[in-house]
Amino acid sequence: MKGMKDKLDNISIMNRELIVKLNESEASQKFLQLDVMKRDELLKLQEKQIEELQKELNSIKLILKNLEKGKGKLDEILSSGKPSGDKRGLGYGGSTPRTQTVFVKEGCVQGGVPDGVPHIDSEKDDRCFEFLEGTLSMCVV
Image 1 (cartoon, rainbow, N blue to C red):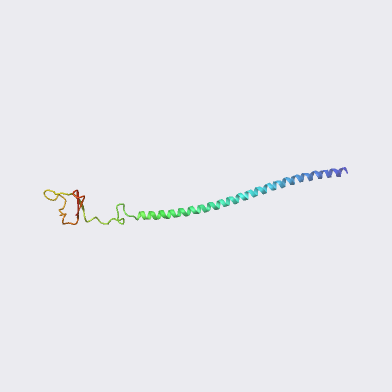
Image 2 (spheres, rainbow, N blue to C red; image 1 turned 180 degrees about the vertical axis):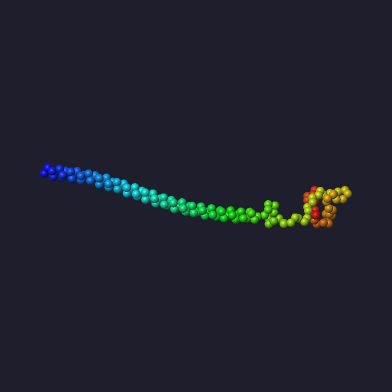
């Protein structure tokens, strides 16, 4: 009987060791399950962030594409534009003026008209104007 009692004690000790190992394994399994759940949550969060960043990237690409189109159109407008001195289409005439404005002091000049100024009788010609009586006259020639 002593041999059976020893065997029973050995089996009892092995049973306790197996129970401890089982408990350790279950604890390890729970820890690993929690770790997997945390990683799944992190993965979902990262996938959501990737999705948001992808949307933002697409939005920025669209803005960039529109800016490039606008730049291309602006370059086209500027390259086909007028030379810097050309003012046609801005309210200016395309040709040089036909008349010349001459400013002369009012009053009589002895000996007629000064050199370089054509003679116009201001009383008979409607192209002459007097500013601030007695100071300055202007005739359009």
